[in-house]
Image (cartoon, helix red, strand yellow):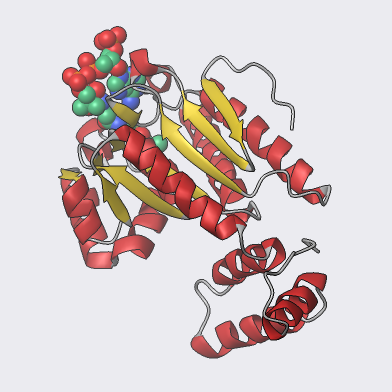
Length: 269
Ligand code: CAA
């Protein structure tokens, strides 16, 4: 995959894992319109490359540059000059990006190395799951600015930790430690250092990359499609996905290899 030079992102491709680093450390990696546009561009390139059928990317890590922040939120400086309608456009633009992230057919891990506040926490929650360094901190401090979450926090925080806990976090605007976020289920795993964090995220993505890519993509999309539905409708959606899996060469190969006691060589279709 060929990425252009970005002014606010660093992209590293290693094996089939793409690491995207938010790179505006002077503003604690705040999510300016430019960062959002550049992230959007990266997702388009990755999405198009996978749609091409070659699976050049099997997983993505999103992290922040520097020791201090994953992302300290929406860009407050940029927001002060916005009209209400421009604020709406800014919000819907970033929301569209979070939906694009969720529709990517490969897993995305947010490797949260420092502050993940406001829009930063919302970006992390749009990833499949969150790993964090022990020094990381999370929160939705919008109420302290006279604001409400604009990049999906009102929706995804309650999905992650339940309504009552999400309400408390959003009403108080309080910041929580990585340890607390782990206890509340926002964070899957904690790591002592930035290096261990990235190694841990990479290890998990490589483990997933050893599975059938069509099956992983189908599980991701099924789990997303069942959200918000009744149990019975969710089960119908799951059965439809199960049927589709039987049309794939990966399913033929996976079951054949199991019975032959061999390692599967998934064709990815
Ligand atoms: N937007 C723009 N610039 C930001 C920023 C943000 N969200 N967060 C930090 N910065 C800038 C600061 O203005 C400062 O720049 P200068 O050196 O030019 O003054 C620089 O980054 C370093 O920040 P601090 O000096 O404040 O660093 P600190 O260590 O003292 O504090 C912090 C760190 C606690 C994260 C603090 O910077 C902070 O509270 N930031 C704002 C967090 C926040 O409120 N985020 C929510 C934004 S609203 C939102 O995201 C809405 C939404 O849902 C879309």
